[in-house]
Amino acid sequence: MQKPQGRKYQVVEEAEIDLVLKCRDSHEFYEQYLRVFPDTKKGLDSISKVWKRRSEFAKKRQLTLPQAETGSAASREIQALITDQTKIMSDMAALTRENLEVSRKILSALAHQNRILSGHHEEIPKDPEHPASLQKPPVQKKAPEKPTPIMVGS
Figure 1 (cartoon, rainbow, N blue to C red):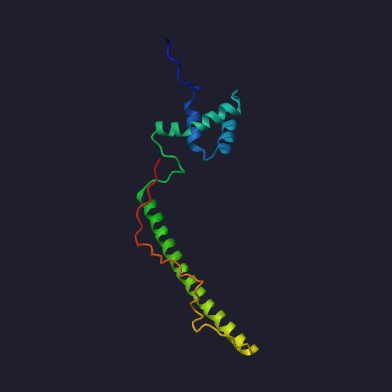
Figure 2: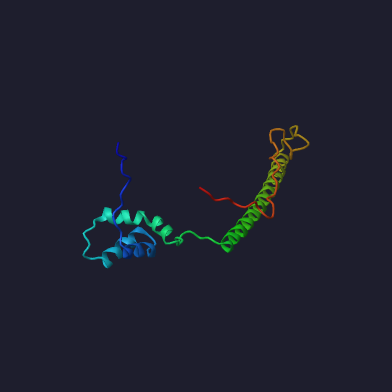
């Protein structure tokens, strides 16, 4: 019994591979391809198949793609930015919580003053700041200064 043959790719010239690795997106590649190879008989489908094999060509040439940033400097910069962002967000949350408490106190004081001015002296609970229907929000921990590393994988 004969083994079914695997997928056969079209032959791609070295110049085409160089062009694929130089271009940043498929539109740029298509335009450059038609300029560099004006007498080609390949259609749009064949040219797009060459573009789709870009990562394969890059691996064979031991190159990294321009979109993929590798290096410890970039990862340290990202880690520092994430730490700063986390710290800013926790500060904003704390300020928003304080603002909400102050707004509640002001509203309760205004409601009390309105009742006094309008002449309605009904039985008012002595502790308007803590009504039974409101629940305290859960206690949130502050993010650590140094976050755990982000794992990127397949």
